[in-house]
Image 1: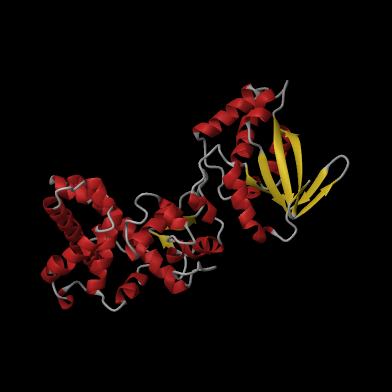
Image 2: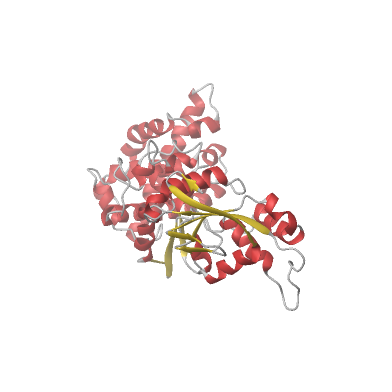
Length: 388
């Protein structure tokens, strides 16, 4: 059938053909253009396996099917020939069928009597996969109801994300290779330091911008029209195809800082007995915002960016050597700013609610004012701080 400018074929295939195609066509490489790889044995995916094994005759009725694209489609009398086949919606179904088909030892096939049948749609896009992003996004959004689709999933195939994988691959963090993982998957690289898309995006936006915009929903961070995506992965107006090296080093330095301060903050908070301090340190993102303000105080006129670019490999440890001691000093100043702002608001606002303070647009302004008026005047002057 013709679907607008695209030509599609719709068919019902038995599960053995799907499993065979998965094994013959490079396994998970069949999902390269999918916004997610298989995301593991979720409750839903376990149910798909169970249905394929116990009710194979009803599988066609219970499953949404699989959507694919290809670069060439030829329909013959007895077969359909395709080139460049990619599953863009249905990775969970494909992998669930592969898992359902597995047997151990002499265990008989679960499909001796009935084999599940799956609805499969293949759409030809002769112009190449690069022009199909809008179509892929719409197919995934409108068809996928088995596993929740996050807005971040739609960004996972962006060119800038692919280049970030290559840029981080050049770094060794504490003896381990670094793997940037923009897609949700059940098979992250083994024995690697993993950097996941959402954690990276939150770290950068909280530090470079503010921590409130995404406090209600992370979708804001991946909106490339009016949200934060182009500020994290672009120049503020448009997203980059490839992140410039100096911008990558800045963001990598921020990420390692966020990772190190987050670990220290959790331990610091666990030791704390003051309930106000524990409450104020509930969210790392508020602290990261305050940390940038302290960096700007110590390294004015944009020099804080140069300072962080030096740390893009993450080759430092908090409280160790001059760099680590300086960053611990910055952490303590940022913490003092957050805690003091929290206490002031709790004391003077009769309608104070902890949860609201953590999400209020006024909170960053309050923290900045406390740092400028109370914390910074008490800090040692720049020439007395630790050498960086």
